[in-house]
Image (cartoon, chains in turn yellow, green):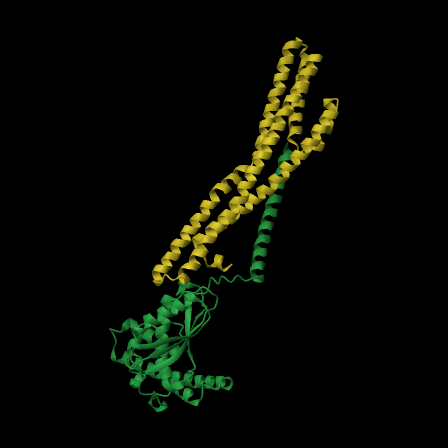
Length: 223
Length: 256
């Protein structure tokens, strides 16, 4: 306590900045942890449900149960696009082949767009973790360098370089680096962890899109 | 879609609050921990040094040489000139430090009135010192109950000898402030110094030590440093006294 209170204004500001970095990055870590966890478990349940159901419209009526899964977003987007295609198809009553291909293309595009937006949603705020992980050690180091500079000034004034004069200033200065590292380490670990988890979710979304397109194409072709 | 973004935002704010609460909890935990186990790193302790005069075990050499009647005569001329070197501001006889602080900056521009004032100060100080000596005598007497070796001759000598002993003590304090270093928590070294009639350091004997080698070394260096500047003891007698060296914790450093 006394270390922090006795520090100079610059060191105090640095410590405050690092503290806010730490608070925000932990907020993001908690938020992302629950978001990714829910997305993962609900995706699994949704896939079970998806393979058990026979019809898209029965899935569409139940899809709200899995609202946290990114796959349901893909499903909703793909399903609504498919419905539009089928509606326009039945309205125009044109040649089957061209609308089939165009319809599948449309659905594919809709799925890709939904995938992208879901990736963006999952990766939101993660950049802050990366920033914290890479910059807060440097910020802490800055505080340390500044603190050591002022403590050397103190040595110059007192003219005594005994350990008694040097040590408190240096201890005071080093705490900035310590707090910088305390802020950075969890941020880097969480960033890598979430990157991995999100990559898994993206793979799941990709394979789901493929499956969805396969089913659509099979059904349209079989019509 | 709208409900989803709304939910995300509440999720963020909830986790933000949770994070702030966690940080606060960790902070309080650290404070509580620090109160529970106060770290013995003692960051605020500077190596301020107090040199305590030992009650002389064999008073015949130090104390016996001077009679109480002679006490008044030697002090003013002898200690005053060397006091130009600033004494430590926290030295226990505050009387020594004060006039020095007044004198040193304007040594050159000293007028008659200032000199008179200084003399008055010195006189007042000697008054204070005499009071202190009486207290010291009382203390010695209290000690004498448990340790009968410090008898009345020692007590009588303390009054006269303490003048020169205080001077040596403050020299040693100044020196120890430069050389001080220690590794254990509260080191203590007791040294018996014998100063010959010409002011030369005749004998150094370490009576006891708490076993901190670096502090012992610091004390030796401090004695070396100080012994170059000793004035001769009053009225041509050898001076022998014990000094206890120990650091005393004071506020954190740079403010000095």
